[in-house]
Amino acid sequence: MSKILLTIEQVDKLIRENRYKVDPEKKFLSRCIDGRYKNEDGLPALAFPGADVGEIAMVLAASKSFGFDIDFKKLITTLAEVVGGVKNIKFHTDHHATPGVEAAGCGHFKQMKLDPRAYGVTSDETELIQQELKQLKNKGAVETILEGEHMEGAVIMVNGNWGVYPQYNLETENGNKFVEIFVYHQSLVDERHRALCSALLHNKAITFKNGEDEEWLYNTFCETSETHLMETAKRLAKGLPIYEVKFEDNGDYKIR
Ligand SMILES: [Zn+2]
Image (cartoon, rainbow, N blue to C red; front, top):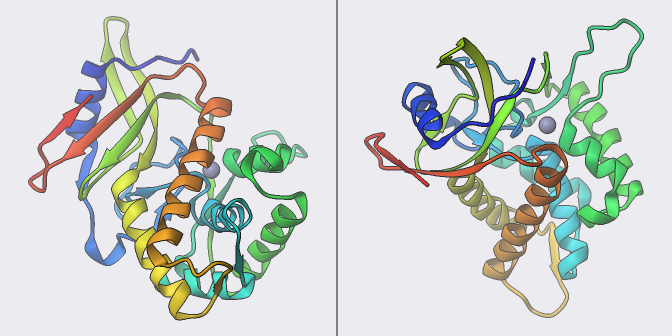
């Protein structure tokens, strides 16, 4: 199957049919940017590289890049608190159709393990996260399994209280083509980072070295998240067009 690079008109059609209102009760539940999530009721709108695995790695990277101490155990319990319990901590692997071939897992986390330095972490830290995932599964977190080939034809950066399903049957001159998009939900990511920063400080999970504050911490999360997104985009979404979609509360939107 050949990939289609989506034009702005095609993205407009996809968004029109695939948009859904964010459920305020579930706004902090996450999914990966991966386009292989099925369009299903209850799909988290907050899309972030690696979902919560990416989030944990992002905080570790921020702590090293910007120089604050983080208590790893408290980071995990605080993240669980922010998302409403361990069962709501989200991460994924994938399924390989060939027996005996190991699943590749989440592309973002895989790239991080291949090149930890580019992501500002160490291989000890990616191993620590890997081990933690086992613990989380024992405590009730469910690992989503994504199937099929990657068919993403664009990267969509979303702002506003609407989510976007990643899969679409696009009408073309040569018949219907199945397409997917990578989704990054900028405004929900920012909102959750605000909540996470506040909870981390409340739980004394963070020790500042030079009297920094919550706003400073939030900015380190923003910068590190952007770095992680770009590192993965240049590896997994190379050559794809990037569109920004800004939603009004009534679901109207603008794309650029
Ligand atoms: Zn992933």
